Image 1: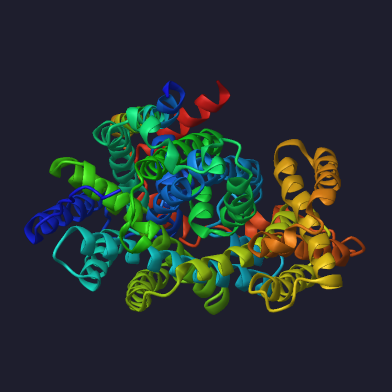
Image 2: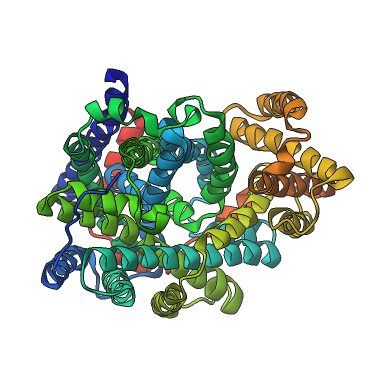
Length: 41
Length: 569
């Protein structure tokens, strides 16, 4: 039962980690673009 | 079991949610809108997108509403390993194509579409074959996402299916029309954040609200032995294996992926693809777990339609605020793919049809190209809405397009590495592969006797070719040949007399093997000695250089300097 619980709930945890990773990169790039006076895209 | 009571939304709440979602994305897209957009920016955003946006966009584009529904359906049908056999293979395909992506980008650093590169490499017939398959695939994908939106809105609110389709189509067109691909990738970031955030909250909430982990024990009787087995052969043969064959083709043949490959800064291709692999896999498998939970609960979707599993589980176990989050998650998934399809279609019409075949590369007017791109988006939306209202069987259409792309995989990839591949070999290989695929897939020929043996032989070769191609990207020709040969020999004793019962899988594999054999045997004696360096010259920017420079801000030079110094580090 514990193994199944971990199996089901591990994915949302990984998803949260990826969201954090992408958001951090985006914010850093947005700041750099602003600092340099560049458009983000 | 009796399904629990469900909740939905009033018309006012749905309108508010749609206005918030599409209004918000439109508002963000206006922030990057330029009065005079340039054609290259409209197609690939200047080939220098950063990691955060490109990783978000690649993830968002690869995830569509159907992938969530299908993953849950796989969990419900095949049990605990079901979502793995949907999500893991799809995710790994993103990873497997990244070495090819690096090669493609190296050969054609400023291209806009893969078809445009095929024009530079071979000529018109190869280009139009790939572009045509891209157009059909993107229109079907667009239609499928509109259908998913219409079904969801009609299920959760008093609005009907057609009203839902129109709301989604109008919303997507609203924020994509003016800035094209640039708007698509920027809004992808917002949409993927909403999707990932929603999964991180909703799956655990449903898990506990539905009485898990105790329900694993009380509901164990609802699972068959195969469904309880993590190494279920049923799940692999019916779901995993056909999917492995199909998604490699999707990854190569789908212009939405190619477009992001050409847009991301070249040194960021690897981290972008790796992040998208993990993000896609975790998200789709995570949502698929809702199907597994439904199976343990003995949940019965309305009308036996497994596409109802996710929305009905959400309506049964989520409170209003989380149901709204769920709604945003699905609308985000289908909108991010739909806007990518619109951007892909417009690029194909701009670069492949107008740029290369109507006006010609040197005479193409960037302003006319922009007009062509925007008109394409409007026409494609109208066509997709009309097709969505017919509620066609999209699965059959997708299988057909998947096979078309399967027939293209070897000829396309070989064209980037092997100097001997000719236009005639490319075109003949694809056409013959399709001619063999169709009767096998739709069982127009009896799979018995000598015919079945030949088809199985080709399918077994197809297994070796798929695995060989995957190895080739990472390890080169020698390892690919070893892997392909060993895989074929190992598979042969198990597959003869067996694959004939799995026509979907056999047909996809046959498409690979026939196109590979014909392309190889028509090319290996050819005297063609293609110079790959000419592709970069033939498939480049359409905008005049002064316009590109003028549209860039004065800070661009500093940014490039910083990028170069990062590379040097």
